[in-house]
Length: 332
Length: 159
Image 1 (cartoon, helix red, strand yellow):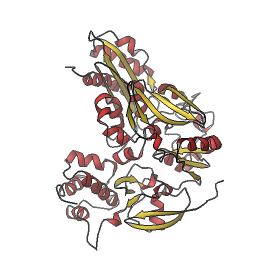
Image 2 (cartoon, chains in turn orange, brown; image 1 turned 120 degrees about the vertical axis):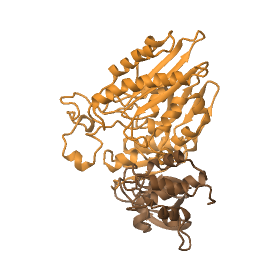
Image 3 (tube, rainbow over the protein chains, first blue to last red; image 1 turned 45 degrees about the vertical axis):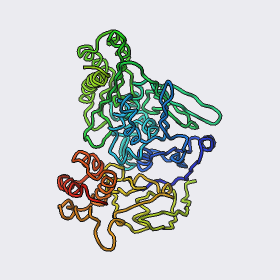
Image 4 (cartoon, one colour; image 1 turned 90 degrees about the horizontal axis):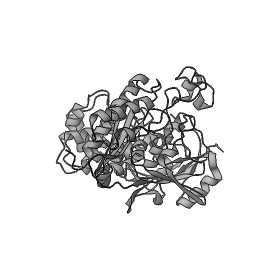
């Protein structure tokens, strides 16, 4: 499939990129690894006037350990995340998420920034122009109908990024820069929860990095995902968990995040209350997993049936909590 | 906007330098096949899933169908045509023939280049490492067993 025509921009520095973004705004589409954007272009889901390749911005490279946090540049490839001994040791959920994105060549091309900023998907949207021509115009395409949920008043497209749930479990923040300004927000707030426009990033902003706070003491984390083929594929249900023990051996931090269950990765808000102050035990994990199940939207708009995916959110949430417990250093 | 402006590019493919004129919306795969007539890399899914378009960029397997040709200046590109030397098949190609790891042949260029990159990094890969490396290359004929065997047969050899 051919790409639509576009102009090509290749800034050499972040300030240059921000100036270009300011000038082009909605007319520009940023590209890094290309594994997400090129496909959207091919399907004509987007037709920007110009493509701005940020792959050469060296300021966006590198995983840097600071006193209180880890700073990951937006251009760090998923392969670099996979290979980082630091991530494997201390931020296991993040390393595991990167290991489960697509296949090795795509992990070399794709970046953490691009993975986070991917758009939501739906079987009735991610199709070629010819297929879409035969379908009613849905919410995602600016219409007033939903083809996945009969009578649906909003868009039920699904956010299928692997990195965001794992990063949110670690309470990560993201750095957004624009000409003359910079803001750091919790990563979870980058997601609007609306399928039609899932990301709250301005059209002149550039995601430059991710800040992951350091965890102390006895803690563990993991990321689990359901997919059709083990070698490739987006998540059809996913869960990330971070558990930390207090001095008395009970849970002091218990964060559970689910993905591929709606238009945004979601924190299971009831999990800390269900788990904190208790020993990390399966019965309580099951209660938290039940909350994850309740929170997830099982809609028939991806490769597997919605009700099955919803049930699998419960299974994968429980497995994520158990996996995080296993990852706690010194845990028997 | 949107008229096809063309740029002059210098691409290094199989150790040869090529001057190409291309619009920014051309993929590396299109330029390799249509401008340089290197048709070894195939377009199959066109969306990065199957791996038939795999070429090496600076020694690493890349989806040429998802790569803009414009971004490839200054990179070293290797296609399947660059493996055989002096009319002699590269040992990996010979091993694929010997072990019947080729049937229809459509995945073979990508599969062989992926194996080439793996064996350059890891001379003695385990079966699990081989299967992980080729996880992004779909073969609908062989069932992978003979491909894995062909790659295993080269373990420990100098390349």
